[in-house]
Image (tube, rainbow, N blue to C red; front, side, top):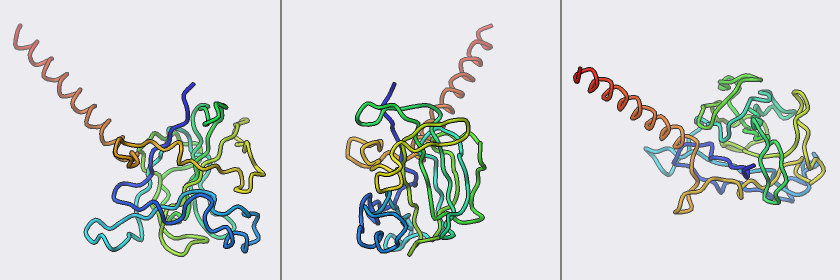
Length: 213
């Protein structure tokens, strides 16, 4: 069984340091919603490629794992989200096997492109990021929770850990040699190029065999 691996959900360029796991403890305590250990995940901002000093208000979010869509719905603050659960169990950093639920939040209400129960692959576009719910600017909130699946119900492994069961998933992020995160968009693009190259090679081989007859 392999260790869990997750691919970055935004297409480059982006910023990853808007709000990291465990940040802003005093702020989240003040909300009185049970978040006494700070931020539950990673917040990312999409950069406008034509104007690098600006961020995008709406941007695509891609699936960072292979899995199935658990649900798409708003929270009690009016924030819309998409939750994806892994197809199989993977090991955590301590060698314990879990299913994994990855949540993408603050989504454009009418920008969700998937539905509950749908199978998704790394690099599939899930939705469009926005600023819904408890949010001060457009960004994608990603948090990751290990657990188990019973029927169609996800059971958190660590529900009382102070982050509603979320863990710091930075250790599971796929990285390049230069330390940058490997994005789901890049992976899908590379696989598409490989598939197209194989298809082209197949056509050329078939053409060569035909001409030899």
